[in-house]
Image 1 (cartoon, rainbow, N blue to C red):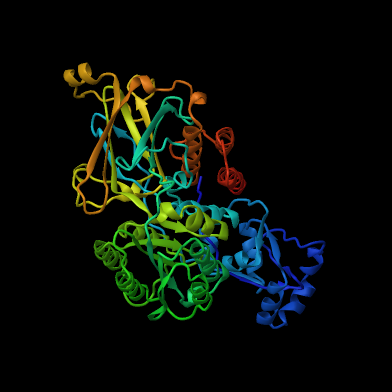
Image 2: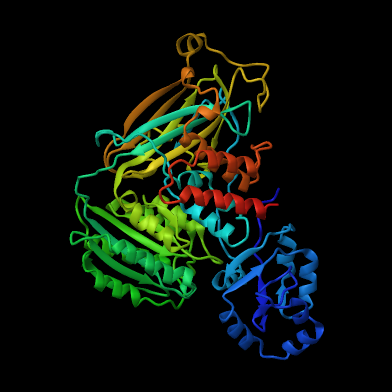
Length: 586
């Protein structure tokens, strides 16, 4: 199953208020498409001014209903100048029937743009034999950008590119009901659960969940925020600069006189639009945002350097000092080398200023750059596809996004080869660390914000399982001491963190016992089951290599039964996305 659909380069002409298309049936109210697409009318309409027709008719067409493209339709449409497709796009497109999907005008216009989106290629984590490699080490990740970006793809009627799907970011988009820590002395709790895997009767899932501390009556630290806003020409569309401005206004409404806001813009060059201003000056800040317009090329490096200068100028000791970079990531002038941009941010984070990235738009979106800049900048990465997502990230989760309670959080799991024969970490491919990195405080890792949850899942196979995915070995090592002393342990969990970026790391250890195994998955918590459904969905979108016969229907059943309390409707929305993806993949 190929879950990647290559977006097509299209040239579209609207005639008499409807879309003439050979790519499937097209409906608009009661219009008779058969009559409109006759040879006579095509000949007549081709004599009109095409550019004027596109402008007028697309403006007057609020919704267009389209169906999937077929190879025959592509060839037929190429004969008309109403619809032109490059041979390269036609060849790359995966032929499959598509369900009807409603697009608004802006979404459909984007479909016609050349696709230059950039995603980091990676391969799924492999199955490891515990006796050969008992240690698994990785950095925590609280980014959620991949989930909302996947949602954007599906809501626009196509399955996402595989490299756009990062399982850990889909899993961590959702909060889980873990026990909160009682004080800041240990800034998070560790929650574990082991139960049968829903997609493989011969394996189990090890669920690891962290819950960060949340202050209820304490005064939050003051914020020194620099909005670094991309106003280049590529940001002109409504799902970019206009959505960006609306989202930042939501954040501003939750600031007070102790906070400081600056606005730096960049296009071909960079400049300061708003000098450090008290957070309660809402009208002045909003006016500065309203005056932003998009034009020119994109010199992102210049803007980043100026933003750090502004952050230092209004630096708040013991406060939150952060740059919020809002862009599509399409840097095309100045320093454009990926590693050079990362190096700039990595060097500047040593000054105590972190960087959060907010991604916008499509067509030229640079997901790879946005995620990596946030990682090296000790910040978070979110993709904003609608105003509700902006509210979630910038209002509902503002304290989590801005107020860090633990730095450089690393997890290491040592599996007992006498109990666990095989294991596989689901996701976190670009967060993997070397064994020696775990104790090395100079190696950077992810930070966790106030009230954040972090969840990781391992699929494990016990030594007494009748089926081993990697098979058996003739010659194996054994240790009588291990068998005698730790035979009741499945694994040993270690976690390191710093209370602040300059302190030494602290170690937390927790053994995982055989007695903790839940034998019936139906008895597992909703946290376990819902996270498993999201993990299965992510794997399905990436090809489903390890899912055996676990289908979309199985994912839906598992998610529906474990939805639990859904105050903001995010879990219900997930179920709808799975349903849509199932239709697109049929």
